[in-house]
Image (tube, rainbow, N blue to C red):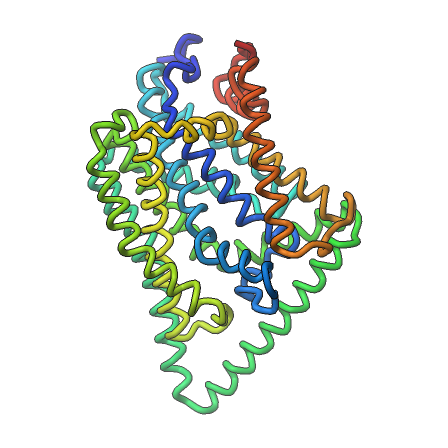
Length: 416
């Protein structure tokens, strides 16, 4: 059977779920608050952990982000992607005879956008990973909510934590031999020296290098962050968040928000009840964690971090959902930014790399964490305003229009 033109009709404005758009808008703020650190820091520096040499307000702002933002919002963003998968597929089944093919095409276009963003704009791109890992979602297309939830928790928590603990225990056992311990300690120290050299080189290129040098360095960053073992840890976590979000979508939680008020209350109760103590402990004890030395302490702290990230993500979702149900009008103001999430996400990278990098205005390293976070908040507020203005005249953001046009294979007017 073949697809027809009417099969390819994108989702209409009346089909949108306002709360989901608001959650995407909220996630955009968290993603920017997290990314602003690495617009002024090479990506490899994430392995150095928290920058404890900051002082005063810079330290307080950095600690807040380290504690309440990092890990929580990429989980939220990934959760929403998985939920969107179910929404997309359910609607595609009604409109086309080949929903998997349509979703594959959607992922392919996202992969192209993500790779272009990764190498040409900023090395912290998440879209290419979403496109790659999104292929695995098609294996769960007919899975019920309970199965999606179980697989999601397994991938998000059990698999990476198990790998960490097995690695840490194996290293501890090996370190019981004095000769092996000396050799391994020497290797860890060499790795740290190499990492510090890479971070210094990256800072020099971003601060004063030309555009081509930055592109070349982004390729090296990508290899170091993902192909050199990072994907084995972060890949299952992202996939797990996809599946947890898909479980919510399969259950129809956001299709009938008021009917799931009790669920949102439980998410707030258990999310903060479990997540807040774990988050505060991470914020206290995780600051001095040596990310290059996989000890038992390291495995324990990352376990705490994983618990905190998922629990707080669900708590944030529950909080905004209950506020939405109680008629908080400001929640609606987030929705236009969420409807243009792809455009706004890419625009954040373009603006701040051009602001900080040497081939732009060259302000790299000129401002502390408090000032750059304030810049991020102000820019996000500007994005909220611009998104409202744009959607008064247009049906979707420019990048969303390109993505949908290439996905559905037909040009539709972007104007109302």
